[in-house]
Length: 464
Image (cartoon, rainbow, N blue to C red; front, side, top):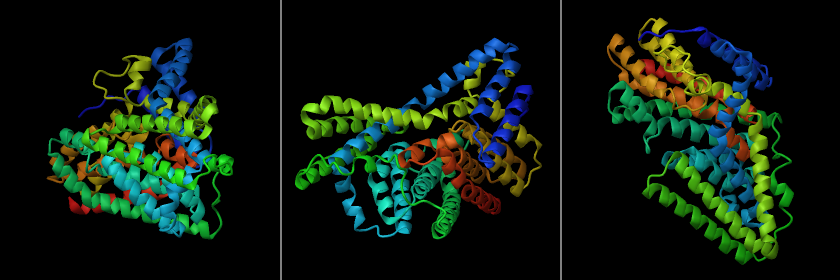
């Protein structure tokens, strides 16, 4: 599998390294990404003014890609504001308050419930549901917002999405590319998923517990949290009426879950169903709570939600714009300037890496992990896992077996990194719901995920 690397590939790689160094140093990387887009433009078009134009077009592309996520976060936030104003949020979480008595119990319950929902419906719709139910409890029992975010992220976008046992979108992509059955990839991924999941979640919890004991984490939620703004209002004063509305809201969301299962809705469709339902609930509760003033207040809450969504995503759009250029966005923005055989800058770099590594089970496992991680840098997690399958087929032929294990390993690495728990623009839904900084969440996940990938890679080498 020959790969032709051009100056554009090396420029992209240099900027990735600079971005990684800047993130380690806890520096903002927006300017670096804008300069990176401009530099790629200069070498692609050989025109300064066109390169400047394409900076703007790259931001537009990134905004269009991120818009569904921005809208679901905005609408969920608007709905949450109304539920808080009405006092319904307290009724929603009251049953769990009797069970969850400590921050450590809250961490594991949030994670396990998130994982279960994500297996059936993928993480995006699950984030909103888990956030609405458990964040008030997390606040009460002393689990820091970042702790709740880590639990949702590692169990949902990590364990559940990388294994994808129920919907089977990820294993189908990798299995088709590797030329093996989906069941083979799923079977091979079970032990790897268990090892990766246990190591990452235990490591993250150990770090969290240590920091809480040393008072390094603030257990108070962000000042901008909507509950703090509205908690004294309780516009719907009747406890019985609030309980009835709470049961109705739960029934509506359970109906969504049933609809998702019956009609096999996933990804964007499932997120849209949750978003539309949330908008319906926002309007319904507003009419009951505000009555004659409902029209004005519905608009006010929607605007507040949109302001929050764009405030969160504003810093991420230029960063996402640069990394989208690693995949199909490059052709759309700069035209067909890459070699004819190119599969995108990120995939080309991954193929080049696989070509220069000498093969044995350990090195093959390490290379597939690195390859999966590299293809995950665009923040999707799925764009490069077909490449992982095809490279696994080549490697297994060279070392005499292990194709399913290598395929599953690359799939796990790609989705854990890009699906995601490490790339800042991939963790935004969780960060937004928990009202924590996306970059801080990515940094918090970094060490547990790296340790998990190292242990899982060694474990995979013994299975081949």
